[in-house]
Picture 1 (cartoon, rainbow, N blue to C red):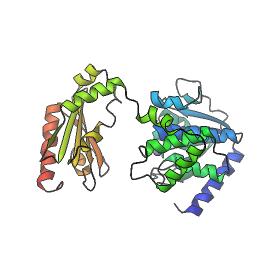
Picture 2 (cartoon, rainbow, N blue to C red):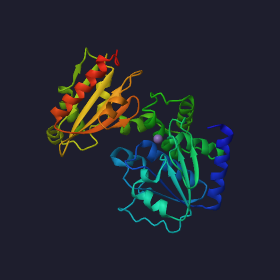
Picture 3 (cartoon, helix red, strand yellow):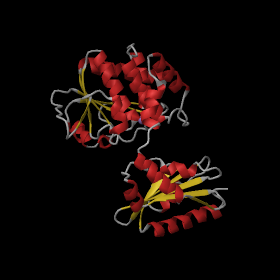
Picture 4 (cartoon, helix red, strand yellow):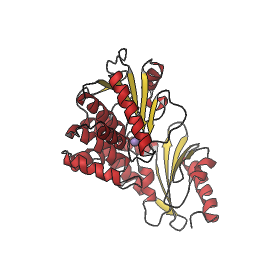
Length: 335
Ligand SMILES: [Mn+2]
């Protein structure tokens, strides 16, 4: 988005905030570090300029991210007492559509207040209010840093920590291709404001539930590479989940692990689900594409990260997936 265009939008947002200073803010369900960081940063900025603001989420921050929230700073709908009656400005962060907010989205959509949205995902559909989107930003907190500069607000340590949290989570500690020069410059400002990188990194990336480690160790035992080492496979079963005491989030990121094997071009991760279904995730290294394979099973996703939900036992589904991958290998897709 061109710079001058964005300035106009920030000016319109300030005008809204000045006119409608009773604000509620939310972000997407299953909140990640950018969702929580954005909500915290925005609300702390608003409090610093004397506005009334409450943060309302459909889901809690989760065990690692709640460390960044002060007690009562984020309310959970259905758990805490939430009253949006007097709010006149509703702000959606790091999400582009009401349904991304879960039950909070229903409340916001039906509310008569003015709406605003700040996001770095490509905009889809219409939004009934002021929409500020820049998909070139590493994280939504990058956009909030620009807003802070536009407001000439002081970057306090509390705001900096929230901005930095969003940055490291969405760039995975500054290594994804979305890591921009701006992201590093903001990080430097955050450090100057007092953020200690290890204190943010440790709970987010440096801590593992023991149940996850046990699940990982079982999954690693069945990891294999096929097709001359080009395709990696790994799976978890319901029995493994049960034995390790893992919950449904404990296999987060397993799909990336098979792709990371040296020489592997495509990683496949299969997770057995209750009810005779298997969730299959494909991951490809550049320049390979696997979305066509996921689509062949009724799934979808991106060029290098896709998934599908397939009916059958783990053995049946794995056989089908291996056969489909074999067709692509034979066609030279992963040479
Ligand atoms: Mn984000």
